[in-house]
Length: 426
Image (cartoon, rainbow, N blue to C red; front, side, top):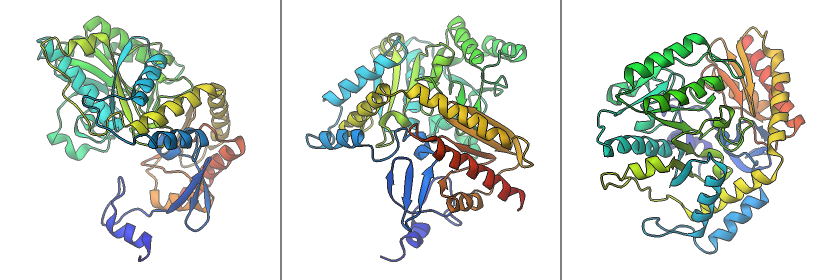
């Protein structure tokens, strides 16, 4: 074969990059623990958990065994008219650890699709009740829910990467991004905006959809639990469903098993993905309560969705193993330790000439720069210093595997400083 990287550059389209001038890629040949090994033998500490899903690190023997054991019996069967133990056991485990009212699980094969399913659940629920006027969604700016069409329609129309599609997307209702930060009380003005918005639009709104406490790819922003709590109360007051997208936050990332626990709220519908399989396979789930599940069939209808690979036995088996591995570990103290280290080590960059804000919450650390960064140039700096950090827009952030050691995390935060210095001198 010709140079594989040259072939890759000419023919393989990577995410969020141009086919004309693609961003450079680095060939990974193996991964172990928190380290990625490149084709040239260089090893990098992974600060991204492979887009936030590899919470146990790579090549974990427990997860390897789950996959190997399952594949000996079956790798896949259709889920229409068929069930199997990996799906049953995983659904039971998920129902056990998520908010008590969530009793029904719909499996799918990606987080974005789980959001599509959630939206369809909400719309079909109200349609079955004869409330066809409740056909819009209410959300907040700064959100990101995926790249498929329904999900795109509730991403921030300006920062959500989908502004080019606004003319063909359903037009939903956006409230300002909450400015009340984590551990702060709800700002009275924001409270008023929420109440006025619900009062004005509740008759046409099927559901509120948002990422609880942590907004991910829309800006890596952390907001007040009181804000989420008030939205939940308004949903109850005005008979609006609440959809919480826990795809990025679920399974411990924020210091709680699920981010909604920070506000002690229970959604009507919850989306899960990413870390559910420990980063081994693509798998997602949409959970809902009895009201929605049964309400969808009030008019005799059924939920009209059925991904080919839903409840894939391999994905279910490794998901169950990953969740059990997480629950058997002292995960909450690990996250607390990572958060403390991030707070302390990122603080020194607060006065850096290129920085506008630093923030850390759970196992998430963020440095926000005054201007968008040159991703390609900064990527080279990070690789040179033996770390894998993938910035975007004006954000240099890390979401490392939970198994990362303090010295490895220090290497990541030190590299961020080197990256900032490189921006300063260009």
